Length: 347
Image (cartoon, rainbow, N blue to C red; front, side, top):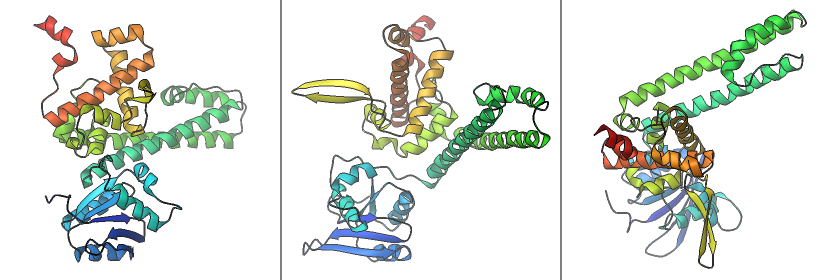
């Protein structure tokens, strides 16, 4: 792979139909701007010298990154939030491309790894499942609120609601019109159909986890199941792009925020700056470890002196660091390092 140090940099603001380019001509120092229709982008770069093409990591960016890499160009995907400070004056396509060009040359900005087609497809399954879950929650809340209007109460939660909905509808038949009962029954069928779709997607995710060596390796870690494993592996794209376990945990928003002045630094709560979905999965995994397994001495000591939610966040941080170590170092998960006291008793 050619080094990006001496490559000319092109900032590209992508959209549905119109793409804006910004670069500086090296021999003359002249600022160049160009607007391209979508079907002309590949032709333009096919006739151009090998360049470092910078884009924001937004919708369609990974597709364009893979396509341009096939032409021999180098691609740098930048977090959109870190490009915005470099956009001068009012936001337009031209100033966006200029801001991307400037941000691409800032060494402190951590580039987003380009995802493969399979990694993008895996994350799409997670997004579809998550969206169906939100719709199911909306539908169950609507059903619960409708029956409450007539004095019929149902418990919170999907499974408790389904366990009692048939009895509730039988009681409702004595006071509600038949056409309304039929409508409520249709609502229950919609909820069940949503759950069936979620289950089908989840089975595909589980199958993906079984077929991938990386996900199998990290599923040996307590609290990491098929959902967490496939989402993390697909989101990381290239584990080596993170220089340390702490950097990966910080990328997920699981490290403390810091504030300081005059040489005094205070640590606050976790930053929550990373991927909310991944962070939620790891937090759920940490809660499961604390609730359903014998706590290690490290967890027990934390529970004795810190609030429960702080311990959950600390364990989620540890899960993230362990995942990075297993994927980057290529070594299987070692339970003895996770809980040295138990390993000593076995010996």
